[in-house]
Image: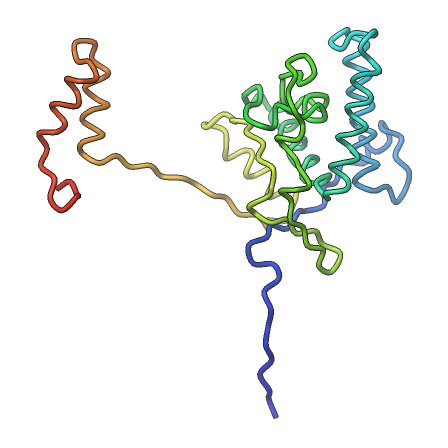
Length: 231
């Protein structure tokens, strides 16, 4: 006889972090051994990029040890909080953009506080030079993680945000790249903004130099409001 069974939703409100993979050529270049972990890959990439920055004097040799110490701390934190694959995923997107002439921003928000992201070339802001805190980007106190069937799920509320501001006209190429990486098991979120009559008129008037803030507000207030809503 068929019986109903209570089903729990442990994944609801959590984001599954996909495993990031690189090509065989990159594995050879980075000297990765068979069965390497995501942490091994991240460390190898950071070592490669770090040496490049030191060699080109982007990071001065006299500050080298300070940068190494900060990188070791960040890598350990990212590994402990299970964010390694997420960081690698973002790195993969930025690398794809650079290889295909897709413009992206220098990095903003809390992500600019990560030396790992700066070293990987995801951001262009040196957090040590500008005294930026890594803890604003990632913190154990704000992180909620579940491990289910060997997969990592991070609470959507605690997932660190990396604002990379990619070129709008070529976003479809990035979507195609991600779909190819994860066998079309991806989704995308879009945002539509609308302006009501009062706000719209005020913003339009402010674009003309002869209308100041007070004038624009005075004119927009002529639009009738009923029960708190604009017709």
